[in-house]
Each structure stands twice: as C-alpha cells, then as structure tokens.
Image 1: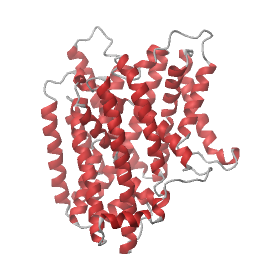
Image 2: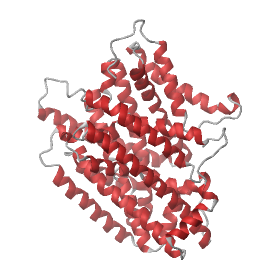
Image 3: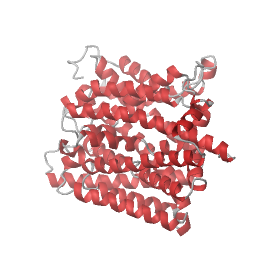
Length: 489
C-alpha cells in the first residue's frame, strides 16, 4: 500500500474534521468550550463516547489479547454495566444538582480547598500520562507505515497531530468534540466490521459458519475460574464496575460530555444508551480477535511476538489493500480522540480548579477566554513532550510501567468520593494530599509482594479497589472529631 494513498486519506479525513469544527465553533464562548452551552443532543454524545473510550490501545490491543485471555475481558465489560448504572443513578444527579463544570468542585464544597486541588491534580496527572501513551501507540504505527517513507522525524509527526488537534478544539472545545467524536466512532466501527467481513470471505465462510468456528474453539472461553488468577471472573466483574466508576464517572473528560447535555434526564439516557452500545462493541472487538487468530491458523501466518501487532499485520499484509486502508483510517480515527477530549478536559480542570478563572471577579469574559486559550496551548505542548519522551525511552516494559502508574492515580479519587458520598465525616483538609500520596505507594508495595503475602494471590485490575480502600481508611484516620455538616452528596 503506497504511503501517498494513506497520506491522502489522512488529509481528507482531517479536512472533514475541520469542516465540522467550522460549523460547530462559530460564536463559541467559554461556556460552549467547557460544557457545550448544555445543549448537546444526548444520542450524539452517547454514540461519540464509544470512540472516545475505544482508543488506539483498545483498537489494536484487545483483539490480540484474545489469544491468551480468550473472551474473559467480557467479564470486565459486565462489571462496566454495573459501574455505568451507578454513574447514571448516583454521580450524574450529584453533578447536575450542584451545577458543576469541573466535577472536582464537589470536593471543595465537601472537604475543602486542599482536597479539591488534590482531586484535580490526580486527574491531570493520569490524563496526561494516559492520553500521551494512547496517542503514542497510534502515531508510532502511522510513523512506520506512512511518515518514515517521507523521512519525516517522529517528533515532527507528533507535532503535526498536536497542532491539528489544537486547532480544531481551540475555539469550540466540547461543543466541537461531541460531533467529531461521532465521526471518529463511525470510522473505527467501520474498520472493525469490514475487517471481519473480509476475513470471513477469504476463509470461504458465511457469518454463521464463522460464529460456529469461534464458539467451538477455546478462544471463546468467557470465565477464568481460578481464584488466584489475575483474570478470575469475580475479580474482573468487581474491577470492571469500579474501573467504570472512576475512569468515567470520576473523570473530567468523560463527564464533561455528559454535563453538556440539556438536562439530567438526557444525561442519564446518554449514559444508559452508551452502556448498551459499549457492550455490543466490546463483544465485536473480541469476536474480531478470535477471527484474526483463526485466519492466521487458516493461512499459516505466524503470530507476532507482540500480540498488539496482530491486527495491523494481518490487515495490512494479508487482507488486501481495501482492508489495509480501512484499518489505517480506523487507526487515524483512533489517534484524534486519544488527545482531543483529553486536551479539552485538561484545559477545563486546570483553568477552573487550579487557576480558578470562574471565581475571579477581576476578569471579564475576554480575559478568561485568553487565559483558557493559553492553558490549552500549554497542555498541547505538555502532551507533545510526554509523547516524545515515550519514544526516547523506546522500552516497552518501561512504558507499560508508566501506564500502570496512571491507573494508580484513580484510587485516591475513588477513596475521596466514596468518603464524601457515604460518610458524614470531614477529614482534616491539609492532610488529604499526604493520604492521597501514601495510599498508592502502599498499594504498589502490596501488589509487588502479594504472592508471598497472600499465598500465591496475584492482583489484577482490583488494585484500584484496594487503592481506593486505603485512601478511604486514611481519610477516616484523619477525620475531625465532629461529624461535619450535612453531606451535599
């Protein structure tokens, strides 16, 4: 496949995004940037959130996981359902009742300024690392297949993506992103379905025949019943529920889209619709993974050492030019939402939580907008530097460790919100940053020595629950003697 053809598709796709930007960002204000003037159609938000949550990591990694973990990831997805229901029934009513723009403002009213800054800081840290890592994976593949042919340095490739994302989010923010997310979701799903169709066709089967082959193979095992396994199904369901709560319900990027809906009723419909679509899409991704392994066996294709490479290798090298082109368009679609929503939410959290521009009476609308735009450009630069740093490290094991560290940052958020919602106690606010620092460290040490400490038990995704629990206990230990004021949660 010629790099010039891929480049042309990239430019056409980017032009489409800018057309959407031009339509949506006209006369955009700070309110439009932060919460879309609370006028976003809930159906569009629900559909677009699939693309935002299904990053390049999901697009490339989950199909490859099927070879070792089979369909056990669906147990995590089952947990997601419980988590999203909790978000719709507990967190969204809280956010709408308090009329929040930044969801971490809740912590200020409940505990105080230090807790508020701590919650926002952990979001900023985790989102910078997570978004940079996801974008690195996608841009790195495009660098290999497209930009290396033109001798364009990786740093310049990242700069191109960052500048394009900066330009189309600079004015419209969330008002633009909910519509561009819809386009990105469509192209990613198209890549999945077209790839499955071509594999089935090349194997001389119909859909029913492929379904039968998948579900009569070992690849379709849903539940790992070994209690000390990282993927024990009970652990995965529980972990999935808490992962959904913290990585969606306590995440400014995902909640900012929900808060842009017209009303709480619309936001709930959005969340529940998104849940249903998400279950189907994740099943399709796993089904694709199984078909890739069956196709590799059928054609005698060697499985790559890095299973993340299975989908791109087969799509580009073995399924023909149409499949390769559709895959790369899907990958390009995954590159943009890896950073556009993150950039907007980082700007929102820093402008409102750290700089407090919405509270400063000495600023008029134009001055607030100018500060917000400078923050937006600043975080674009931060993402660029972190992505280039990942490339310089050039050690997948180290990068995996860094990405795992980002997961630890959600534990303190879980503990803070659980303590605020389910107790009437108030911790000594100045101690909260220390508690939020110590808890992940203790959690890490327990995880490292869990085999020795717990008779062979290995922690998986449930580390998040442990991290939140340790934070909760720490807040309880530094609580004030009196039970605080009525709980606003």
